[in-house]
Amino acid sequence: MTKTSERSIAGNIASSVMLDRLLIFLVLDLFIILFSAVTWGIATETAVLGYFYPSLARSFDLGEGLHIWERLASSSYTFGTNTVSCGGFITKLLTAVGVFGMGQTLMWSFSFISEYFRIKKMLAPLNQMAINTAELTNSKPVYGDIENKLITMDPLSNMHISTGNRDLRGLEESINGLLDKMREAYSMQSRFVSDASHELRTPIAVIKGYADMLDRWGKEDEEILNEGIEAIQKEADSMNSLVEQLLFLARTDNGRQSVTFSTFSLSDLIEEVYGEFSMIDTDHEYSVSPGEGIEIEADRSMIKECMRILTDNARKYTEKGRQIYLSAFVNEQGEKCFEVRDTGIGIAPDEIPHIFDRFYRSDPARTREGGGTGLGLSIAKQIADFHNAYFNVVSYTGLGTRITFVFRTAASAPAPVKK
Image 1 (cartoon, rainbow, N blue to C red):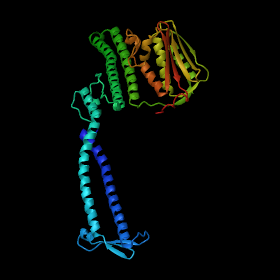
Image 2: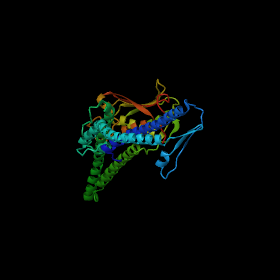
Image 3: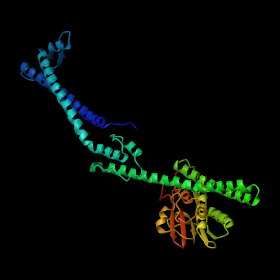
Image 4: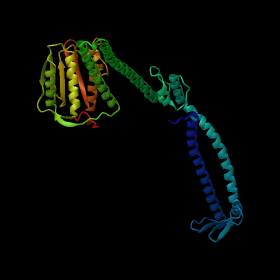
């Protein structure tokens, strides 16, 4: 970004104004010359002929001499068959215009200085805004370099820019809104890094612990050897899953996550997910209502992953022996949906807005073993965004949770962006 000083901005504006004024002066001088020449010609012809003939042939002839001034001084004006000398008039006219022009030049010069300081005063509120921004960063104020100030400011500061000038209120609100978004993004990034580090620290510690145990006793004890290998494999799988989820979110943030749209049966897909969980999870009772012939255009693998995430969440927080319901249907607005409903612990009302935040767990007591990485619903939310879809969440503590994935109709949303 090019740095622009206050002086240069005020000077540039003043120069632009004064150039327009100079053009007016030039046009005015030209008008005076033409008006004077026409008036002199009419007066001369009337004096010689007694009246003015518009239809007469007229010409102007330069005199002789080495310099233009000498030629103008000896010039003549011919009208009809009459010729008169006009050198005296021309020299007097040019002398008067020259004097008048010098006065205009002096006036223009003083006006430029006056205009410069007037514009500088008008720009004072913007300068004050730059100073306020500099105070946020504890750095030397540089007018016009607000962007750099915002980049280097303390992201945890709660200060806002204010000049007290109502004409700049819109600009102040825009900059202050940007500051708030920067703070929010910084906080989210810090929390994301902290939570990711925490999630990775635990499996690394477990792997290291079992590796040390195997090094001490596992070489001779087959039972300890098998236990250690099994634990290390489990934690390695957990880390691999976390890394894959982080990569998915990173590709999404960078706009590099590919989405492949195709037409398929939502009814068949939810039955497929129902079959998988019925087979691998015998601790819960699953039921499915797939609807009839519900077809959608979407990324099939992503939608299936979203179904798995919602169903896996329901499984984790529903007591053994209780029911989990999967369904696909078309709602009253004509929107195609799939839904996962459990009879588990539920979610507190004030926590529902945060369940799609990265690494968020509604129950602080949930362990990593039972609660996963905390990224599943964040990924589900990204998948919904890819498809211009949204979630409808209804939950009651102790009764269960119902999460509905809703595909917007063409009438209610623009077509999804295919990448």
